[in-house]
Image (tube, rainbow, N blue to C red; front, side):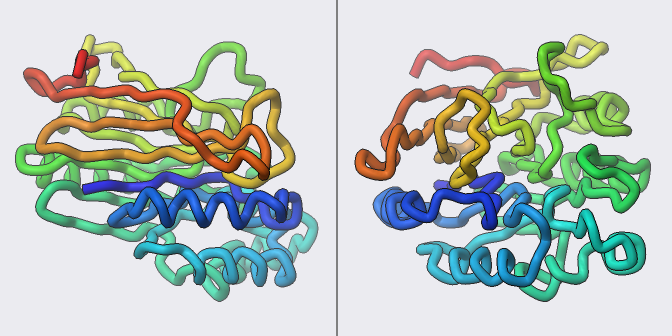
Length: 267
């Protein structure tokens, strides 16, 4: 199984010249499915969602997605309070927490957006328990992947606040079994197992940077390719230094599940 992970497209503040190279790179990679970890648009306006819809309609593989904080209205307070996900559901997908189960992997989307938060996110107790049950159900036979916009762990140098409920979620999910968390939001790349307070490294986190946004924060535009082999994953970082050069591989990480935890592989 080959997956592509995109995040933070930010139509409305995207580089239009990068759209053809990104679509071409995805066509060459030939993923079985594409996961999009939120922030399709910059300000949840219809004109921006129209561009995002045109992009996903051109994707070369089936896709599933979750919303990001930019996908709910910021300045239209009535819409933000009463119908925060209405535009997302109209233009992108009605289901904000999609699920896909195949012979080799199980993917669950998690909606971490919150109408009362301009930037941050939240994972509530019901979501935590549902994901834990999903991991327990599938981890023995498949690689389990959780897709969300907001990260569940980040370095001390990150100015953005960690979302509410994240530490509790990581503890509960580490007890449930090994899994991979796919996120965006930070516009930076990070691949590493997270060690919980109970000394478990059952969570492999993949933070992907922005696919198209001009808000690069010192990082290039990028996406990730994830190959799933039995109880192992191979992650490739695909980076665009410019629209002319397109997206090329810029790093490779391999991890295997050993005794219920993730370990770096030499392969």
